[in-house]
Image (tube, rainbow over all chains, first blue to last red; front, side, top):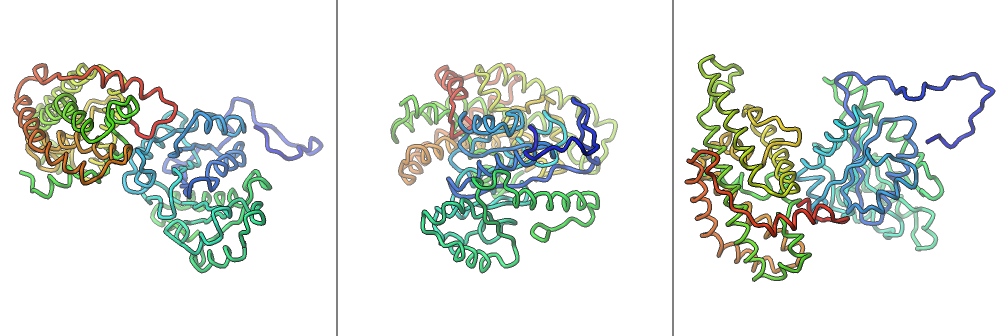
Length: 245
Length: 246
């Protein structure tokens, strides 16, 4: 799919040969940056994944692993949006234990990532979407390099104050559906204050996919983390610790 | 000889080999209305133990036997004396034969896939936990080795006897489905645990029978099966929404 901006044909430029992968080959040691996306049911994880697929479609070799109860509607959601080839998505069943599959017993998710790479070749970015869970869910560092925790204003503006490992320790906290704040009586300044108190220097993004279908700030954060990941992989003796990017 | 703690670690449902995602046919049996309550769960678990449980335990014990007369210590040193190489070859051949025999005993393609997927998960855990163990002797099938074979090798790595490996396999057969029943049906966890306590003797008996059977050649190992479980497994993979991987 094409990026949604004006393409100025008066400026001299070239197009990549169709059928030729325009991406530079990764160095042998590089592996995909794995980003976990967690958060409560209905907070907008799948919509964020769709927005990121849209944002990175022409930029990165992308794979998605979903742990949510994955229906053909979910697949159609991504397909209809024209954002991701179904071959780039793997679904993992979690036996009613979504937190176990991303935290305590991560083999099925690691297998799914391996399968994507076997089928598609090297990837730049793998998004691992957790099943909708509660505020205590968190990703294992054995599964992902960075994690994003998604809450939404409609879940109540007290959520950041309640804390939990997702809110306090995720590398990025996304407070989603800000366009609904006035309708549900959520005070964004309270959420901002509480998030800062909980998270110290860790970043928080307020976002509305309705108003920003490319999730610009989250995509920008991932680009930044990817650059760090690549330089850390290139200098494997000095990996960048999570959260210090 | 394994320490008691080692045996407990391997049998623990929290051992990270993906067991939490599998109901071993229970999700389909619940949907079909065959398992509804504690009594029907008890019947289901007895059936599983006598069929899939016996077969899995026998193959796990046989894999443990095939692998334990192995050049293990030399592999730790990173080289194998030439006189031991033929042992490695024999071991690979024995494991390949067990893999084929277990394939033949697993009529449902869906269940074959599940067993190999679980085998891959257990092998991943085994390689991480016992880096010196030789999981490379398992058959190099693209979709993974059958789970009971990997369990046998994990047992060797942990110092378990074949009989102990059979106990772990039989135990996992009943506890996995029982835990899934608590989650799916909201059964009283104390009552389910009491049911497992009542089944403990059956579990031990199946493990002992499996360990004896494992002394025989692969083609003589138990082949107990349940056609309805096979049919349920085939239906289950076609569901649009599944909570469990099996």
